[in-house]
Length: 85
Image 1 (cartoon, rainbow, N blue to C red):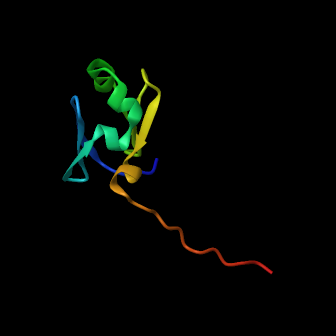
Image 2: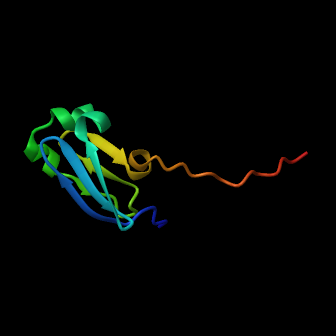
Image 3: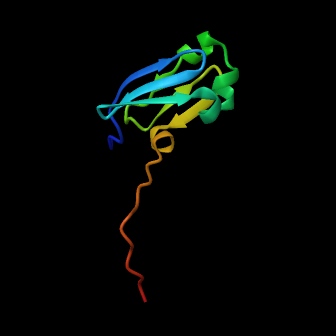
């Protein structure tokens, strides 16, 4: 399994999600990253699952998923494939 990120810590409060990813701390306002999370109860926000690959975080009670790449603005590029003639 490809490891995308090392998600070391996830904290969620009434207004923010605080992540420690790949050794760096990030703070995001819930209202700016997810309307569903912003509208959820604190209990629903605290019930999340981190993907084993480090790809993202899932909140099953509100059916919300956030990718770490999306939060951090990471864009992966693939090598250009040679065209076959």
